Image (cartoon, rainbow, N blue to C red; front, side, top):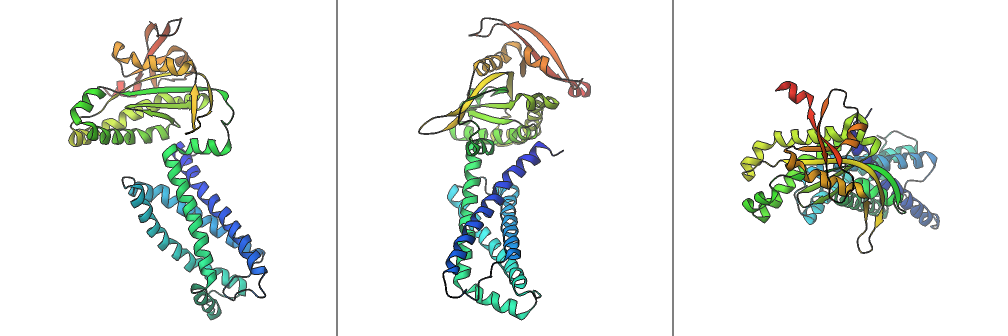
Length: 369
């Protein structure tokens, strides 16, 4: 089985291939229609037949997937801290060189297929050199440029609003409100006000970016979805079955703690403080749908969100880093990996009935100590 991180990366790369394939087909149809109206095809153009069509479709899709892989695994991290303008300019320069190499490789192959000869035949390379200074080359450059622009636009939008949310907008999953069962984790930084006063607004914001970045891999690795960043608070959500599978929601919490612990020295050296957090978890039914006119977003509504926020707010009262509702504990299969320690019932503001609360202990950590 593929890991959640691998699945996420594959679903981030796949749209690049689709975008490039669709744009390639559109340009191919337009170009063939234009060439068909001429008395004769330019000798630099590749005459289209079934074999050439299949090769072209596969080639443009593979190029799109390669661009996606480069974007996801390399350039996205390299230029993460650059401004949008610099990011686009640097990427364009890299991709121009990359696409020139692609044309250098694919055109001679297509020409060899068309002429039914070896790629080393002089006719192939004569046609290639004529192609480089022809309108056909300009048409190809425009086609690749449009595909590149569309895929980079997709990548940037996906990074800003989240791949999962963008996909839901495209598919219209939440165009009409639906009811679903989800698990929520409200995660809040400890002593955030004191830290903000100590660092100042700009440095605090820089630390917050690094703090969120440190938590991200654990969220992805355990199939979590970031619903919102609210100041120093992160709201993570799972579809119910995904959240309880292999105790994803619990493992996510401890993986985030571990990730912060590993970078604690760096945080102290860079900002003079190592951030820590507390979290509350609960589950229940929510209504999910698109909302907004001037700015659309996917919103969850339901009592479970208020209850989870109240649970998280009681962490200081009980002196623990994690609180979880009794209802969710009963749905999990801890299997000795974790221990649920009961803390009794507590009144949550806005609810008529008291709620049983637990804290979770990592059995492995307890054994090691």
